[in-house]
Image (cartoon, rainbow, N blue to C red):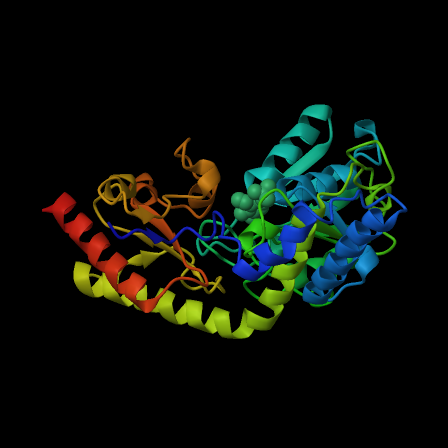
Length: 378
Ligand SMILES: Cc1ncc(COP(=O)(O)O)c(C=O)c1O
C-alpha cells in the first residue's frame, strides 16, 4: 500500500548527502574532538566546519554557536541559563507566550516552582503574540523574553523583531525558539535582533539528537551541564561529532534550497487546501490563515468530525492532530490559546509538507482525506 508522510514539522528524514557527510565520523574519524592527535584533529575539524556552516545559515559568528542535543536542550540552556544567573529571591522575571512548545513551557514552569516570576502573554485568534501585550507584561526585573519564532502546530510566524527592539530598549534579553523556522524560511539573527536562538537539526533534514543555541557575543549564561570545557564551557561532554557534522551539512543544503523550496512548499500546501475545499464543498477554517505562516504548514479544521477518527481510517497517511508532542495527551495549548472551540480543535489536522512531498502525494492525500471525511459524515 502506498504510504505518504505529511508530518515534516514532527521530524524530517536525513537528506542523503547529510548521511554521506556523517558516515566517516561514525567509523574512520572516530577520534575525540578534544584529543590532540591526528584522529582528534579530524573530529575537531568536522565540528569546526559544521560550526561555520550553521553560522552561515544564521548569519552569525562561528563562536556564537553552542552545539547541544537538540531543540529541547537549547531552549533549556537559553531560558535557565539566563534566569539561573540570579537567585529566585531577586525577583527576576521571565516572559513567555501562550504559543510555546513544551520545551519552553516546562523550563518556565520549573523556574516558577523554584520561585521565579513568570508571565505568559496570550495570543490573538490569528495565532499571533501581539507586541503590545508583550510590552505590557514587562516588569522592572524582567530579564528574558522568550517567544517562539513559528508555532509548530499552526505555523504562525511571530513579530520577533518588533518585540526585540522594544526589549533591547529596556536592556532585556530576547530568546526565540526557531526549531520550526531554521531551514524553512530565512532566519537571520541580526534581522531578528535576538540574543539567543534555538536550532533543531532533525527539523531540517539533519539527524535527531543534535541542535544548537545561538548565543550572541557578550551574553552570559549559566551552563546546565558541568564537566569539561567543550563548547566554551557552556555544554560539557564529548561532542557528538557525526551528528554535528550532519547538522552543518543540512544547514548548507537548506541555505541553498531555501527560497525555491519555500515557494514550492507554499504552492503545494495551497493546492492541498484548494482540493480539500472543492471535495468537501465548503471553505475550510485554516488556523492562522490571516497571519504570516510557514510555507509548509496547513492546520485545517474538518467540520463535524474528529480529526483523530479521520487519521485512524488512513493508517497509510502520516499526519498529526496537533504537534507530535501532544498527540498522546490530546490537548493542544496552541489551539486553546487561539480560542478554538472544543469541536473545532477536535476537527483540526496538521499537514506539514517537506522537500520530498510531490504533486502526486498532494492529489492522493486530498482524495484520501475527502473520502474519510465523507464516510464519517454521511
Ligand atoms: C518549536 C519546537 N521547539 C522545540 C522542539 C524540540 O526539539 P527537539 O525534538 O530537537 O528536542 C520542537 C520539536 O518538536 C519544536 O517543534
